[in-house]
Image (cartoon, rainbow, N blue to C red; front, side, top):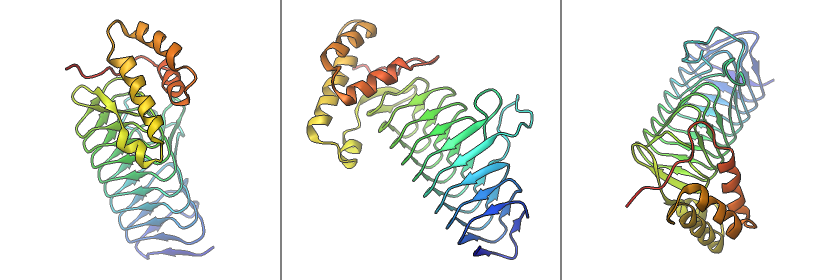
Length: 264
């Protein structure tokens, strides 16, 4: 096993380190930590608890991963923080493991980019290719889909969900579920439309994006109560795969309900 460990780093003998791992000055790695191949820890990184990082992750100074959750009911249970491969975790980022209140596990997907001082709380699930700008924060039990963009200082309340390919604007406070493909902004968050630029960058065809914008208008711009608009949209767009993803997300709404559109 080839590893490069700075002499000032403190690595517990029980920690599991893969091939070509680099650990910089003054890092601290606990006994239950696993670092997969080609992972790099820069100076002053702290990895605690039952934390695992996938291959080719890069963690910058003063990030703290796996310390006990900030929850009054946490009682030291052996919960887990799992971080996928190819993640970049910048300065002062914090991520916490799960609790017995939920699944005992916090999961972060592959290819995530977490900018300075962003936070992933206990029992969260973050999908692949997520981007968290500076100081973006999740409360406990939040579920973030794939290809989600969180703007700077954006926050998501406990138990809320954000669907695939959604964008949360800077300084937005999300207190209800944000459907896939949408943009949400404001305090409190309201939908403003479809994340057209994000979808274009991910290679969605123009006609698919146009169809999703039409669905959005049917759900959030027509007159009448939301339940009636949803029922009508199912009839009109039920065979469209992106529409089906939106309907499935809405069907899974929990205690916080679905984020509604900004009023004119």
